[in-house]
Image: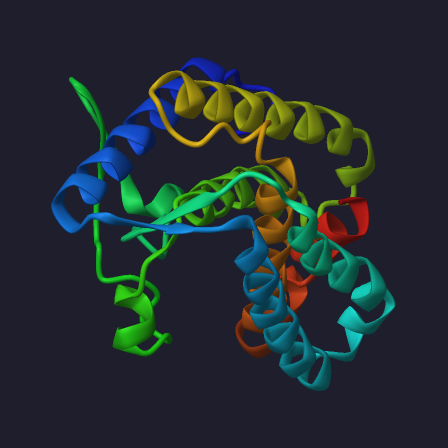
Length: 218
């Protein structure tokens, strides 16, 4: 919860996530995506955004920012390996045991067609999902609280510490360096936040400020 240090566990979870991705790469292989083809990934993200804008008008003030983040992938110069990923990775999909973190439920996002769930993607997509999950873990407790204002600072600090520690652990264990691939990670986090806005609009409208605030602050 906000105010409770979770950084050491987040770092360990980052390491476990990198190990999970290494195991998936060994089992299913990888496919290199040359830098020039990253533009196609950005185009696909923009297509999803166009559909989201039609469903949720609250996203429209952020459209230019989101489109720019997706278009920026075309300028990346590092090749990106594509591989099988978890696909629905968040704090509810991991279990802390006596010996470390264990990932659960590899079926992917149930609302997504099976062929899409099984398709290779950037490993940082799972990283983005977990980073967004830290944000949710802190901020959903503030919804509707009359004292939410003074608590936002500690919540922000908790999220930042957890996200930083997770990324450090992930890179140290051999995963794609989130700092070196920051444009891709940012685009994937924004893509995830857009998905969250759609989900909340349909299921929990009172929670929409969580992903909308994240998009606004990105």
